[in-house]
Length: 227
Image 1 (cartoon, one colour):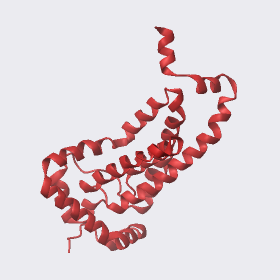
Image 2: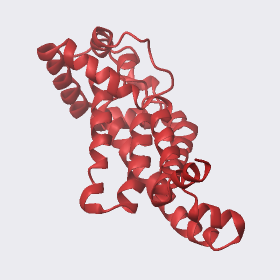
Image 3: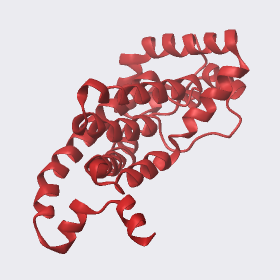
Image 4: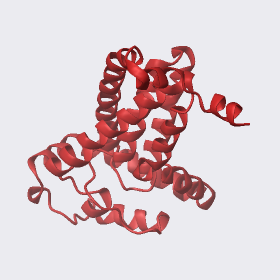
């Protein structure tokens, strides 16, 4: 048995249910990641640390969505991505995390804290564990990419979500069930954003100067005119 840092009976009902329901599989998967770390070590640790940083604050995904919005052909995708990120953040950071209040793995069991400290040297993360904010943002932004783009290729966007979630488990800042929760919440947020953009975008494009600009503006054309 791993030593508890926070007794289960001191957690919220939601956190208790998650730990009781998913505790065994969470422990098995996190132990697997620890064994991978022990076998491979530093080279993989560096890759994981760099990759997981892409999700910090959703900054990379926000910048990517803004970049896509500069081009006519990808504008809907960019707007959908940004909307999904915002909706996902509202669901996750303002509601679910505070209601469930699940401690992070390294704040729950001493063994996870020991494993965490052998890999991650940038300090403890704030807030609670469920669902994963990184995974929520990734799924919320990649769902519109999948829905708006050619689905024969756009499904590959979900590989980014899976990879990012795996890095969060590898460094023991989240349980695997937190990643699953982030995928579900992010998927819902991304789908809502897709519906809103589809419902509003075309209507805006048919009305007034703003709508015309929204439909026709392309940063490449603007640069050509100024050249």
